[in-house]
Amino acid sequence: MTATATTVLFDSARLRITDVRLPPGASLDHRHEYPTLRWQVEEGNERSVLRPAQASAASVCDAGQSCVAELPPAERVADKRVTWAEAGSGLTVCNAGEGEWRQVCWEFKQRPRRSEAEVRALLSSAIYTTCVGTDLLFENEYCRAWDFYLPPGGGDAGEPHHHVLDYAFVYVAKGRLLGARSTD
Image 1 (cartoon, rainbow, N blue to C red):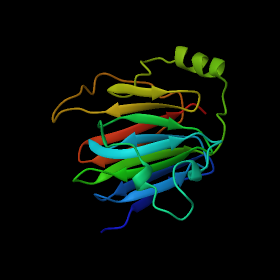
Image 2 (cartoon, rainbow, N blue to C red; image 1 turned 120 degrees about the vertical axis):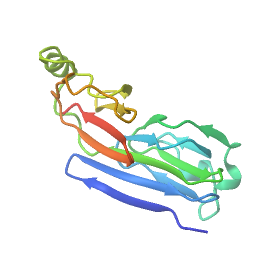
Image 3 (cartoon, rainbow, N blue to C red; image 1 turned 90 degrees about the horizontal axis):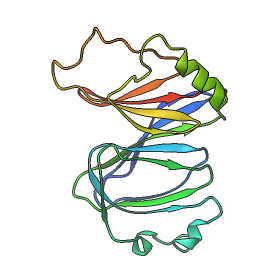
Image 4 (cartoon, rainbow, N blue to C red; image 1 turned 120 degrees about the horizontal axis):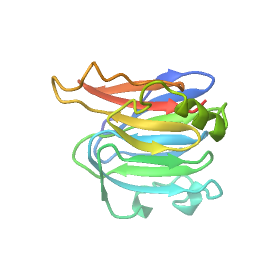
């Protein structure tokens, strides 16, 4: 069996972006060190448990034992599903599908630099629309996660948008881009 592939795509004092891939049948037990946005890339099937920060891995499996037997039945995971994990929470996941399971994880290593009121003021002072992507999939005090999808030849270069906050992008496939904009 191929090993789990974890690749750090970007790492700064404020943000770490990691590409996580599991081959069929592989599993991963992970504790989130920072608040984390998890973005599913392509549809998949998984058996998983997200544990709150107060719970330990022992609540799902005995130390040193395989956690897979204790996981719930497999469920379909939609492409572009975005989930939030608080710092200290744990995740045990097994790829129950026939193809690769993949998520891009955005770890926020610092609290937001701006208050919600400051963010609202920046957004309301924008000259153009602040809708910088195709669909806003998630937002909280840390980030706004946008999907970017245009069919070949799609889009209008005459429709400007305005970035008023920091941002980071990840291309996940030819013509496919993940984007999250930090609110700080």
